Image (tube, rainbow, N blue to C red; front, side, top):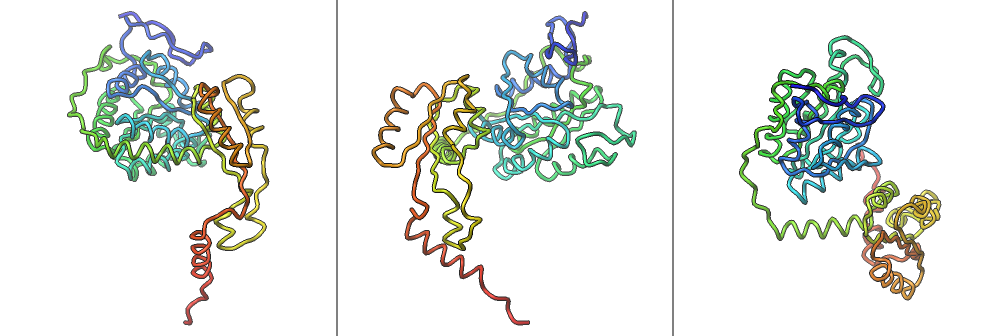
Length: 350
């Protein structure tokens, strides 16, 4: 067979997956993701995964969603798995893997099949005692693997082509069957290399579909949406604008940590206020569709909501709501007092 295109490491920043060429590791992985229902892969680029990302981008049925950091990518894949049954994320070796692991641990606890793909060291570096950048400065490449062993149901370290097909397929099928995250590390020099085991169209999986609890799913989506509306970060806003999201974000600004004030007050409970609407406008930079406003009365809030759900509903809307720092409930005041008493108990006598 005739090989076509580059392996993604050149200056063009992409790959030409000629349909006549033998299958490559990168294409095999991309097709497997599509087969199991993944359409969006949440990724943070790093030098060990760039070639692999080229091959994921080249798959027409996959969309690569660039995230601001690895933890965001992990939680996005977690949410994707909750909504669609399986999620996928792609990061770089160690600095990316150790950053995303908290989200993967959450997916493990929630029984969510998330395929965590890590671009690993060059296959030639294994066993050489070479110290690589973006690691902890030791020649042992297994630190990341050992960490993931406790929060994934299967780990595949792909540093040769002969068993790559079997390892990738076993990892993905195990994650789906056990409904747990899996870890797949792929050496950075392998994604663009063809191998006879990577058929042009991989043999489809035959796994019994899981029956979803629709009422539970709807309740979870509603709760997640409510949480996200009050827990979105500036980095998330940037990603939402870039992808044309039409959400309404409410930022409740009381100038500090009210809940901590009710437990134990101090100057550390007052935060430096930002111009939050100005920050979002700066993130938007007149390049996306975004509308911001600041309100401090009920009438202004009602008007802002009306506008966000009416004439501005075709864009991301950011509404900053100014409230008094002592605007809290009787229950929170009582709870704060109880916590303060519990925290200030003196040591028991010896």
